[in-house]
Image 1: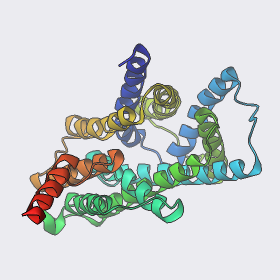
Image 2: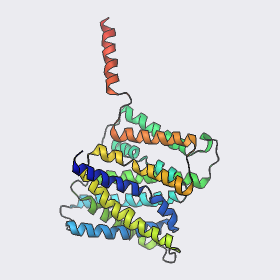
Image 3: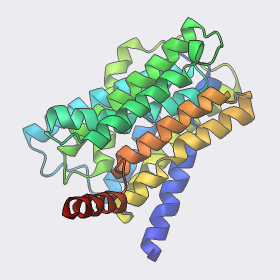
Image 4: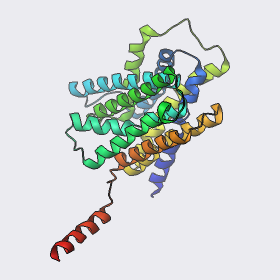
Length: 308
């Protein structure tokens, strides 16, 4: 690994580890979801505006009507992503929410096959089925022998919908090649803040220093700082390494939930989480169900059998 790649890996590691704690701060904020997302956009957008201004991205050179439309559609999707994710954190344990949210790669594969004409292989279909089976198992209920509340199930559903919106945003962003990612994120936040403005409750404000600090952290650290580190890391790393480091996010979320709130997976839920993580990794990195060397051995054996 080159010095540049090591720097990129450290930047992305810090970004993913920090992002893994976002659920804690959403819970500690004690505000309506719309207000949390709004202030996240305002504070994080302010930082990204400064970054874009310093890097000379505010000219928006090379943006035609088609790219602007895709950028706006991506902004709508990312707004849905944040609203449903934060609503999920308020209803289900952070560890469960983050794990179900990690089904993003499955959504991207399905959307890619539907709208981009990407090939859906048998291996990917099986990995997708395994991942979705993991989601069913991790919800609990009849699969774990434990009773689950309607609120909990709604939270799991919101996390799932949030993952879909994230994947949808990623599909739109794919059409924005050549556009600086910092500028894309800034436009997304500006659009989201404008759309949320009529729905923000101006009579509800943080009541404690912890609540104020949580809102500030979500905007300044989890949005502004994390996005800058994330994009800087992406630019220095191969796709395989950046894909692997993205799994730091749910792992940190699971650990944080256990340490702060005492939420620990049951044995069946651990199995469900393992199915999701393994399937997500396989989908991200294109792992075949049967390694190539075994397939080659099988073909060689078939040829020998035919020769006999």
